[in-house]
Amino acid sequence: MTTLVEFLNESLLLPLHRYSYEECRATADWLLAQMNVRPLVGIVCGSGLGGLAEMLKDQVAFNYKDIPNFPQSTVHGHAGRLVFGTLKGKPCVCMQGRFHLYEGYPIQKITLPMRIFKLLGVETVILTNAAGGLNQDYRVGDVMILKDHLNMPGFAGNNPLAGPNDERFGVRFPCMSDAYDRDLQQLAFDVGAELGYSDFLRKGVYCVLGGPSFETIAECRMLHKLGADAVGMSTVHEVIVARHCGMRVFALSLITNQAVMDYESEEKANHEEVLETGRLRAEQLERLVSNMVMRIEHNSDENINLY
Ligand SMILES: O=P(O)(O)O[C@@H]1C[C@H](O)[C@@H](CO)O1
Image 1 (cartoon, helix red, strand yellow):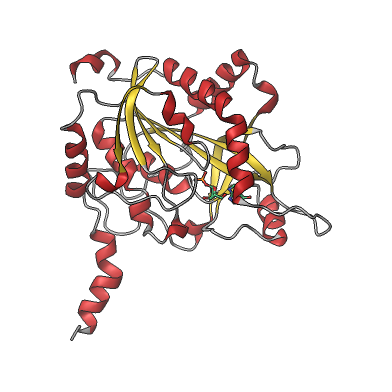
Image 2 (tube, rainbow, N blue to C red):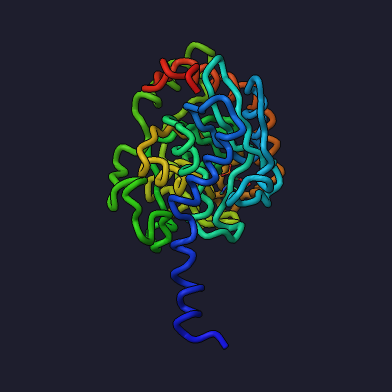
C-alpha cells in the first residue's frame, strides 16, 4: 500500500523534479546526433500558424512522439513536429505546435522545449500566438508585437520556474522587466514598414489565462481595465523559461478575434475563427518573420558552418 509520504512525493514533489538538466541534455544530444547544423533561432508556431515551419529550407523534421522526453500535441492546428532547417541561410528550429496548460501537462513540461532550444544552441526565440483583441482600436488580422505580459496563472503560483532551481539554466529570481527584447521589437516595426505592413502592426500587452474556455464578458472587461491589449492561453510561460536561461525573446500575437466586451453582442469566440484568421495572415507573417531572422545578429554567426 502507498504510504502518505510516497503519495505526497509522487503527486506533489516528483513533477517538480521530473524535467532535469540531464533529461533536457539527453533530448538535445539525441537531436544533435542526427543533425549537422546547430540552430541559432527557435520559432514557436501558434494556433493556425504552423505554416511558418514550411518556410524552412533543407528541412529535417521529427514527430514529437519520436523525440525522447517530448510532450505530444493534442490541439487541432498544432501539428506536433519539430522542424530544423535554414531561413535565408540562418539555421533555425521550429516547433510546429506548442503545448498549453489546459492540455493537462504540468507547466514545467509545456516549457521544456525552451530549455532544449537553449541546449541546442538557440540564442533568439521567436514566439507566435493567436489571441483575442481587448484593445478597442484593434481589428481582426492585426499583428501585435508584445512589449510586456500579464501572467495570470503566475499570480496564483503556477510559474514554470517553481520548484528547485538549477543554476545551470539560470538564476533563482530572474528579472522580467526586460523580457521582450526592445531591439527586436524595433526590428519588427522596421521590417514591417519595409514590407508595407504598418497599417496592421501594433504594440501591446498580452495576458495569459489557463483556458481552454474562452473568457466571459466580465473577464474581458476586467483584463482590459488591467492594461491588457490581447488575451490568450500560451507564450508567457515559454517567455519566462527562455529568459531564465538567457535567450533573447521576441513574441507576436495575431489578433484572430475580437474579445466580446458587450452584453448586446452576438459574437462568440471559437477555435475555427482563430484558425481561419491564421490562414488569412499566414503569408504576411512568414515574410515578416523570415525577414527579421535574416537581420538578427548572433554571437555565433561566424561559427555557423562549424557544426
Ligand atoms: O497556441 P496559441 O496560443 O496560438 O493558441 C490559442 C489559444 C488556444 O490554444 C487556441 C484558442 O483558439 O488558440
